[in-house]
Amino acid sequence: MAILQASRPGRQLILINPAGSITLQAPLRYRISDLAFVGQQIVGLDEPNSQLLREPDETLLYSAPQKLDWPTILLSGREETVAIIELGIARLRLAHLRTGISSMSQLTAPEIQGILRPMSTADKVSHIIAEATMNRAGELFCTVSPYNVDTGAIVLKFGEDGTLAKRLRLELPVLDELKGKGNPDGHMVPMFMGVVGNRLFTASSVGHRCAYYDVPR
Picture 1 (tube, rainbow, N blue to C red):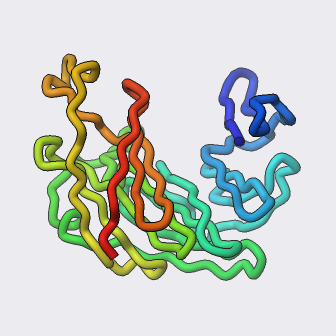
Picture 2 (picture 1 turned 135 degrees about the vertical axis):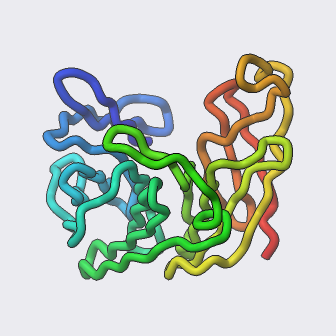
């Protein structure tokens, strides 16, 4: 497991083995915002400089031809490909780390372009994509904001070229311990997402709960 720890005076990478022991603590010179495992490599996203670095030696792996739009998520795709999702504009960038070949596509769906959202400012972004994950085939799954908790979270499935392949509506579990201000019914709000095979997992940092859903083929 890799942990990106942000603290003064800087950031550091912490590696933890399956037994729970720390095997590495390495200071990072760059402002790494996200990490992804690609084969045996750990790849860090240096968002301010729009580049990907191998960690912890911080060797340059890829430099984006166009500046990234903050904020972003970094995901590992199939083979040696990584995906960068620009959350405020719903854009997908793919980069193959060995060949340097990259592509950029706009994610398109009625749930993305057909919804009015607050205007983004220099210090506040109206997120279109709330969370994202990729499977081993390179298919992208995204939760879209906003959505109605009573009718369920919206998940869109895209191909590697950004083409919409499927829409999912996830019924959110209701838990007594989650009831409170801003969440009177106690819906589990998905904060993290992963996919294994045809099963989609969502987790909430509040209450430390996880739910899973079968994805129709």
